[in-house]
Amino acid sequence: MEQSFSVKNFRSIYDIDLKNRGDLEREYFEDAYRERLRIRATRRLKYRFLYKYRKGLIRKDHFETSVEKIKKLLEARKGKYNQLVTAGIEKICDKVNRKAYRLPLVKLPEKISGKDVFTIGKSAESVFVTRHLQNILRNTYEVRQSHRDLIVSRLKSICLDASPKYIIKADVKDFYESIGHKALIKKLHSSSRLSVLPKRILTQLLKSYAVLVGCDKGLPRGVGLSAYLSEVYMKEVDEELGNSPDLTFYSRYVDDLIIVFSPNVTIDKVCYLQIVQKVIAEKGLCLNNKTKDIDLTRGQTKEFEYLGYRFSFKGKDVVIRLSEKRVKKYKNRIDRAFGQYFNKFNYNPNKAAELLIDKMRFLTGNARLLNAKRRAFTGVYFNNMYINDVSDLEEIDLYFRSKSIAVTDPRLLKRLTKFSFVKGFRSKIFRSFTTSELKNITRGWKDA
Image 1: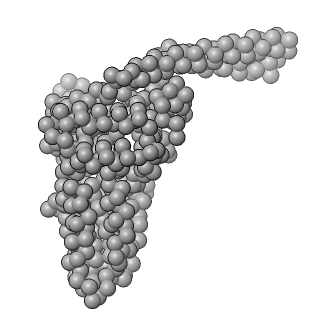
Image 2: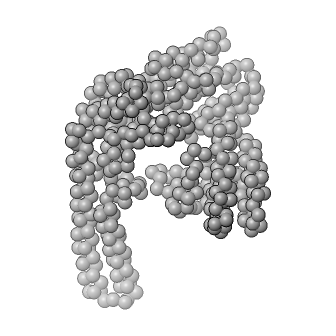
Image 3: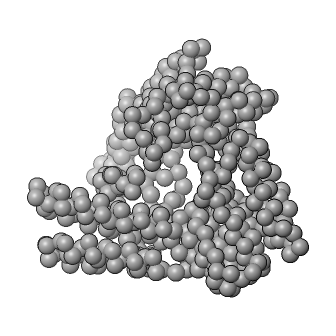
């Protein structure tokens, strides 16, 4: 892959973002965006003339002359559009190719979940450089971030298999904060496939982080590049654990590991956890106290939680429910929805009621995500599709009903009684929302 910060490479990023209905054009290329709206209006003008011609409202020669003028106008506007985009990208390239350029890392004043969070800002330079570096790391190191649904789907199939298993569910303690700079920089600089410019920018990012935190260890939370750098760092761990003896399944989602062994009855099963601890320790990391091993070779009742699900083993039966954390998350969102309603009720009761209805429509239903790179869906079914026991959703329904009792408006209360988490899950109820509606609905839910 060609790795320079060139107009060609950045234009590719721009075009892909435009194809995926991203925001680069509207955010950073306002003149080009306005020109594209003119192109769209010109195309509509062409179809209006075609409609009039087919209806016999204009003569053929008038139609052909008009269409020819429109074609020339379209070509001129397309040319101007490309010139505007190219000029904007050239300005960005000029800035980021200067020797003194570095990603402007800053620590945010507020922590999230007790962890320091960082940003490199939202400038066009930061956005294009970050996306290009992500592409480079993805191609150079074959970085593939695991897909949650695929992991849970495979894990569910393995758990439902009645064969004896020994499962280790492990969490890396302070994952981002524990990644050593020396080892990571060595890995980056030893690659012959990584060119000098990406090496320099990435090394400077790590040095800026070290200055801000006072030690040469850790990756900045909140910066998209950190996810890719952590995957590069953990690649050897994945390879070693993936080749463990008696292994049936191994997967990792960021710092959450799940390892399933099919043990030899004569082996000491404690050694499996020791193998994992040794591999993790060799990378300067350690497992936290949430790590647990589950011995299913004796048919005992056991359970563990992973990626939002709770797997419970009772003899030959496997019950898959929502994790405690996910149940709490739903209840927190219900609390915030009703809290916002009561706070706004005195000022604008109708608007407060409609927002509450929208929030509950969203929480109890399913929707297609707008502007998504893939045809992504979200909702009470798609976020929990692997459960085979709806008792947690029934509990959430009861909690929702208990909160609804405080509503004094009978019409609103009647509308609220139509919503159900269980029904939304079982019937896969779909609901549509505009972009602005989704922003209003999800506002204040980042930590909930």
